[in-house]
Amino acid sequence: MSRGAARILGAVPRRVYLDHVASSPLDPAVREAMDRARDDALGNPSSLHAEGRRARDILEAARERVAKALGSRPREVLFTSGGTESCDLALRGAALARASAGRRVVVSAVEHAAVLDPAAALGKAGFDVARVAPSPDGTVDPETFLRACSDGPAVASLMLANHETGAVMPVRAVADAARPRRVCLHCDATLAPGRLDVRPDALGVDLLSLSAHKIHGPKGAGALYVRRGTKLDATRFGGVQEERLRPGTEDAVGAVGLAAALERAMAAREERAARYAALAGTLRTALLSIPGCRLVGPEAGTLPGLVNVEVEGCEGESLVVNLDLMGIAASTGSACAIGALEPSPVLLAMGLSKRRAASTVRFAVGEGTTEADVARVLEVFPALVDRLRALAR
Image (cartoon, rainbow, N blue to C red; front, side, top):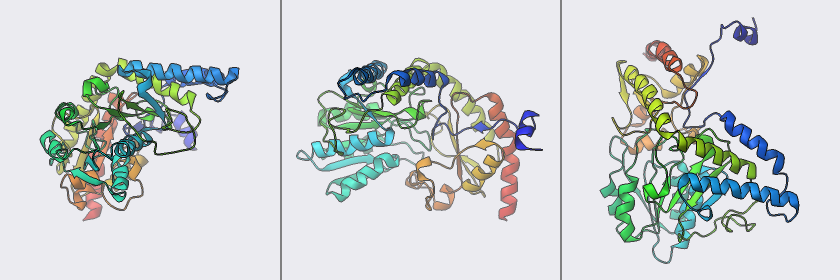
């Protein structure tokens, strides 16, 4: 029997996708909005003819929608190719613009590579880079972070929620204490819309990064919020688009997709967060009942919908591969680290040994996840753990 025939007859269950913080399926409503825009956004937004003006109108309307969702001004929104570019522009752009006032950069040691790699590049360029270690549960103590800021850094970056442990960071507390010190604070909030409040005024940050494909929007679209008065230097050159900070022809259709996804996420945040937390709570409770399974991350105060567990006696990679064969998509951590030979830097920074860090698996629910999906994981996971442990003996 062919796989297609088996699927028609119901022999092959639908795949269960539980890797929503790596990337999320495109919302059909977002797709429709992009399709409508695609028919009209024919021209280059910088062109003077009618087609170009129409593309510019579409782009600026999307900017206004993103700004309204964030409670900000349209001129404070820069469109980018995604969260990685947004974080890079925020960190390096702010550091270069403020270098005369101080050449110190402060980041948490559990940031995504989108922040850690630009920080490392700044270190090679002569900046003093401080990496603030987390507590064993993956959270960052605000006082510890602020002590690292005592020398007046050019820029500091603290993510809103960690991509591997789900730990929610004390961004508001850091922002309030850092403001009198005139610290420029950036926040990577790419995972949070639809799960946490990401409005810049609620967080008190100067710079905030967003990514569409994390919130059921298109890949290749993102934004950087830049509070009015915050200075950035360009890090890329070749055009005058996006306030001369992000050269290149703007993707008006991608901007529409980001705007639609962000609006939907912000409007449904409380409902989504409650549903995600309930699904993940069921999953976490059952997984932790398996002998030798331990929670990775805080007991409470986590990103709704994310569960990371360490499975003693199993390799995380083997768990993920076998789950995939069973029709379940999970992860060992950051998708941007694929092919890496070393365990997760986040987990190592939390104090886990390489062996323990390599024994983790992450599940993340999102739109479309059902109770049946969670039940399917719990149906197969205990037996899979037993089998892999037996093979490892």
